[in-house]
Amino acid sequence: GGIAGTTAAETIRSQDSASSIVILTEESNRLYSRVLLPHYLRNENTLESLFLRTEGSYQEKNIQLITGERAIKIDTATKQVTTDKSSIFKYQKLLLATGGKVNRLVVPGSDLNEVVYLRTFEDAKKIRELISKSRQAAVLGGGFIGIDLVQSFVKNGLATTAIIREKAFWESVVGENSGKLLSQILENHGVKILTETVAEEFVGQERLEGIRLTGGTTVKADIAGVGIGIHLDIDYLKDSGLTVKKGVVTNEYLETTVPGVWAAGDLAEFYDPIVKKYHSLGNWTNSSSQGRIAALNMIGGKNIFTTAGMYSINIFDINFSFLGDPLGDENTESIERGSFAENKLARLLLKADTITGASLINLPADRNTLNSLIKSQTKITVSKEKLKDLSFDLHSLLA
Ligand SMILES: Cc1cc2nc3c(=O)[nH]c(=O)nc-3n(C[C@H](O)[C@H](O)[C@H](O)COP(=O)(O)OP(=O)(O)OC[C@H]3O[C@@H](n4cnc5c(N)ncnc54)[C@H](O)[C@@H]3O)c2cc1C
Image 1 (cartoon, rainbow, N blue to C red):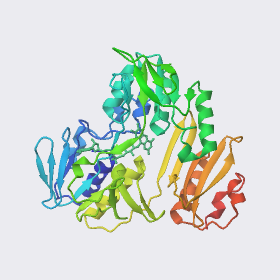
Image 2: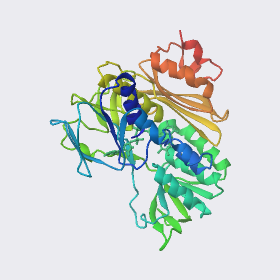
Image 3: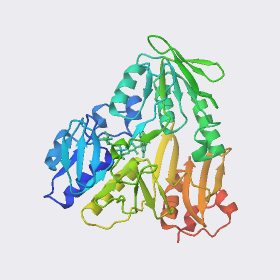
Image 4: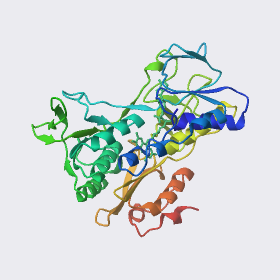
């Protein structure tokens, strides 16, 4: 029922008016935007505006949406999906697009009501209600969701402390200097940052009062947002015969190792012919385009998924973009473009003289050019010194 599954169902229907299409989702809602959840927390969106489809739109497209029912078993031999309500769905073609679930922090006190996570519509509703009763907030985790929570608390006027295990925010994704720049941006907005520490206990009897950290310091908080990553909820795929590693493994056509079963979105660990490796890209645009490509292949097409991933967010009005494979691997070389002093930084990742990924801070002008360079796998023939220099126009590298 997420963006990958819904896009796939609608793509199939646009090409094939006859087949029966069922979307099965364990959540109780029709498609909504996860991307807008933080905006709802910041009072920039109403609850109703989070929905991306009307209730009637499924019926109009003759797509059966079944909510509040969870797949618990897939039998790829008999082509059946069994749910927690004991329903059995027979299929000819199956798309798996079940996304991820938040990792929960398990320490004493972590079941207090004010320890919150942000993944679903219901999570966002709960957080917004708690924000209205809170004055001090803490956020655990220095990734995307952690930063979204920090911004949401700050924009609601809560005194906010960010607690991260690493030396700086997103260090592994953006590099050391970009991580420092991000920390500076947050501090300029009044965020207190505690690094290289983790929560040992959520303190409070009836309700949360604070968080005790390694070393014994206690940070006062009425609400604690936890953003420590997601895991794929793949228990239901046990005994399905599918190859599951970090995600459900697919080829470049998004077909799994079992014929007749495709995977898309956050769940898929697909072969990416651009970076020449299997990986997952947990972002909205990728999930939507994978849903479309998988659907076209489910109805007989042979389309390779090639979109270079692009993920863009604003943190207190500073633009951050992530392109291609921004993490790289042991064979990628990293080049820093721009500088901390200029408040503009990019980390470019190169493999065999082509750019395979990049993270950009405050450099929206480079975004489309880099996306084209990654997609076209253009050989980079200029010196690294030139790439580092912001006055060098990357556009000149495109033939
Ligand atoms: C707070 C937040 C902010 C984000 N911001 C951005 C952003 O700014 N830009 C961006 O590009 N990306 C962002 N993302 C990431 C983006 O939302 C995800 O990459 C995208 O939603 C993944 O889509 P999906 O369809 O693969 O999975 P999901 O959206 O996770 O959908 C999976 C669906 O499967 C259902 N499901 C799961 N298990 C089962 C089961 N066993 N049986 C039946 N149904 C099941 C779920 O109920 C859900 O409906 C954000 C995510 C969050 C949580």
